[in-house]
Length: 111
Image (cartoon, rainbow, N blue to C red):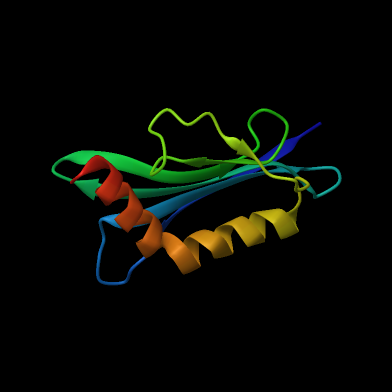
């Protein structure tokens, strides 16, 4: 089975280069369907990159890590299939809520 990997760093705010996301999706070359993905929200401050939120399916199921709730969060399982629709839903969530997630992270970690 061949796998095609797409990775992309995306700014979340046109005016704030310190807020960004990284998306990664692995596509089965034969079926052209997603077999794995991760979407991570970050911000950069004082020479340190902070991960705020991550959607991924590294353990064979879709889950979310909310680092604004717990720094060592092991991931909350989501009842979703590994597919393009789920990837799009997770990506839309970050794009629509990244400012709120960042505010929660900053409040939790008092930065």
